[in-house]
Length: 276
Image (cartoon, rainbow, N blue to C red; front, side):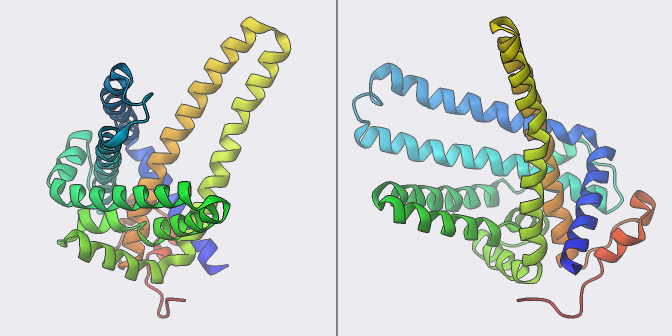
């Protein structure tokens, strides 16, 4: 129960940060727009040239690898900006969209290195999954989940500490051993929260479909927008939680005048015994 209580406290702190800095919601939106633009710039020429329809070959494989890397860099860059801004708020500052982006830009080299590692792991797991059949999908699924859990704090480490990518991965693994319970509880909790938040979209589509084709089309649009909003909020909340969990693991304090909660403050007191 202690880990669940700590996770709830950290989630509340993350929500307070997001409420105080609503402009941070623009970062996941910018990430999504950049992802669509970059993906289109890669895929449309490939489809137009017939490379994709002809099986791809080495050109398609190379393009896919570059696309994996580009999309990984975009996602990590904006996540790093979110982490930088959240840490600034947790330190008692007043972050802006500009300060968040500048903070990520100062770590662009480390972000690129981590993007290379992340994209490489994704490509390898995808290749194994496609060639190993049903058993391979199970194994790669387990490995993928384990990898995402162990490396959950890599971005905060790279943004907030003066370390390289290899050392950052090792450092994140060490922090995971201290916070594995909070990490897993948060993943399950955010997943369940996303499921509950998406239910109204399903209800809207169901009601629209029962009325008629015109109402159904409109309901699909409304549901799509609602799911987009939920995705943006949860993405931002997850980034802030990464920062809060990092500060909890490293014993970083938070300003009482910002959150005003003894429960949250206690969550940031390092436990005397940690680990598995």
